[in-house]
Image (tube, rainbow, N blue to C red):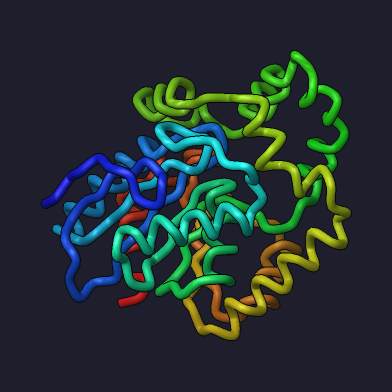
Length: 264
């Protein structure tokens, strides 16, 4: 199995496996983290589906990837497409955790894919949007780390095993420019405009017939599940409990099984 650290489209990446008849997999981490979060999932995927091509990328401004002018969702999705094209991947399965789940969803609305796996990222703002907007002065001030720690405390990190907890707490860079840049659309758009944007994206995904999987750490609310199923009638919802906001670290083998079955 090939295991190479390199750059594609300017983004730092780990490239695994070989190109063959199987759909390649692209993995995108969450805000402030890096591609190392996919280590457990990649190991399980390699055991389940040996040699399958998989590309774990660092988002712009994260890990080994340089800063970019814009971190808005569509712009980052286009940067990812540049990396996918540079890597020679054909219609990959896009997997993303947290804000990465939003970005790979936007990617599928703009570029050819074989499927989407969104790991624990709601596409409606709800209380989180209210919290971010209410704390905009904190985000723009010297205490932005305190807000992040408050958010992290509610993500269920203590449910993870010690190795996964260490990964969450240490393999992270909580930079102010990243929080402000990746949350810019939350801070500047109304709930109505934000939702309308996602409705348009999901309509394009539905029209393309691309399979969509939503993987959550707990059962989504009835209202959100109803909305998601109304937008994507064929959506598959998977609940992997025991890891809070990090089901990919709590149940990497279960996630690998989901990924392995997408687009086949």
